[in-house]
Image 1: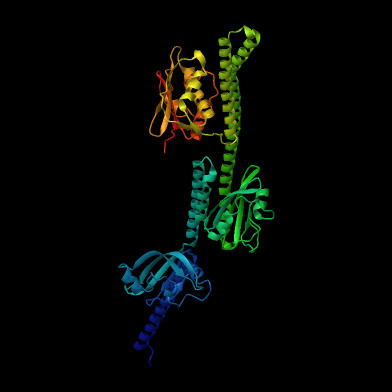
Image 2: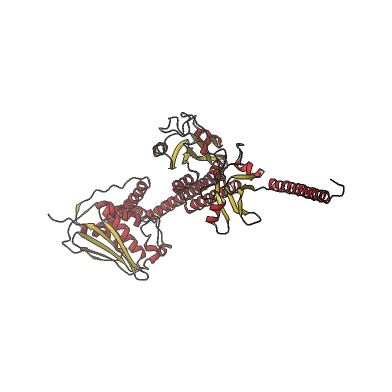
Length: 559
């Protein structure tokens, strides 16, 4: 072909253009490779897992975070259906994604399946991918591992639950003067939170004083409760914990391990923790957690048990201290009461003793010089004051019997009430003024003559004590359907309404009696003696007008 042929020129030009195109393609390929390398580096540096699929839902790309999250077994993610890793609630292809979301985008929390069969909680964002022409070319799934977040939330909820439990237990303990009343409720609350059987075992002087159980096996609960009243057995975890005041935690137990008794449980627990109920240097028992799954008793539960035990132990010790102080105060008060009783008794005995001594001295000195009438009066006075002195001694002896937990002796018989009333009234002699109305024909009553004399003397003596000079004491008897009543009325200062409710309590004296002598036992013993005879006593009073005490005796009804 001749040189300079146009065809050669056109061929050379075409080849040059082809070379330029190839160079452009090579440069574009390099740029794309560089961009893909940058893209891969960006994907690789992402903490979130990213998976890209083709239109069929097959994985075509996955970053390192996705491999770490979804493929711990190393089976590979690329070329596998993305449905292998998604939950059933997640669309596993671009077309399903479009069907579920109009804009082809979806965000949700779900559980992803891993190649080793496990699952992981994740937040997932997925979107349809389109090419430059707008056609769907696949989908992308971006997942963030929520395992640690959920773990932190669970830890926070657990901590909140524990602190709430501690607050509830503290409040429950503060509701009771005696914390032992709250132990059953506290055991139930702990069992509900930790999921174990809980027993609160109180120990007093090497004896199991009380056991409160909640949760767990009921047969084992019965065995635990049956320990109350038995000695704390040596070579048991309970004995060691109480003695050392140190907790014991055995996540896994052999069936024969002695926890609170050397006798094995019918259904032995697989794990246990015993925590002392201690305050300072004193231990009052133990908090026991018993579980059937050895893995249930983790360090957090044992720590919670120690915190609960600390609060319960402190509350129990505080209650014991309060009781000790109360007992001491009660003993001191009883000692003062005994002193007051003896002082009052001594004072009340002075008058009859003085009358008896004076009468005897007069008879001894004057002898036959006294007229017979005077001698008879002196002897009558000695007899009356002797009876009065005997009543005082009997009242004191009756009181000591009641304080010792014994009952006073009464022997009711059928008797007439009129003569008994007249005898008591007559024993006070001419120094006391009376207006007596005891009609004839009253039914007989059942009463102990000596006790009736004692009660009437207490009531009439009080009426004389509080009656103004020149004002008689009224003694009125009457019969009802099945009772005979004797009313003793005075016109003294009366009894304040605030004193009436406790008037018959021992050592109680009304505010109006502050300036008078007495033991504070007369009305108390009168009520006791009336009840012992099958009768009763009532009182009504108006301040400034006087008081009315009424004795009711069971009448003897003719058959």
